[in-house]
Length: 196
Image (cartoon, rainbow, N blue to C red):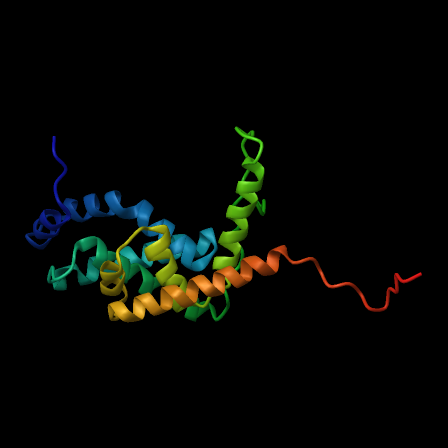
């Protein structure tokens, strides 16, 4: 059986079918959570932002005009929920944490010799991403992680396409610098003279 399009579920919800909103939540909750996790950096904050995003979507869905795809509109609602949460918390995102207290996810047995190195790099990228300024991070997550087009990201963020391109470039540069920093050796302590 073919999946009911988002726009049809929105129409059904507007016509009084509350289950249609439940279907939208079920369909998009993983994507919204993943976006929130990458924006906030903490599972607890991502859960809160996800909940806030769906509550905002529920309140605003009657005003959804369909000028953009529902998923684009939902991305915008989610990014705004993340911005609101981060402003309320008045802090920079913390490194991704796990509910069991571990800093890193368990690393599966390596399938290839370089698997552990790829996992470490992926974790380093995630941590570095959290240090990129929010407006650049949002574009990086939408375009590079969730594969939205420039136009879709622009609609989701409510900015021109040129702004998306500029922020994406600046975000990639910032992320690259942060990753280069991770590879530089720590500066030698000048008080430790190693000369003969």
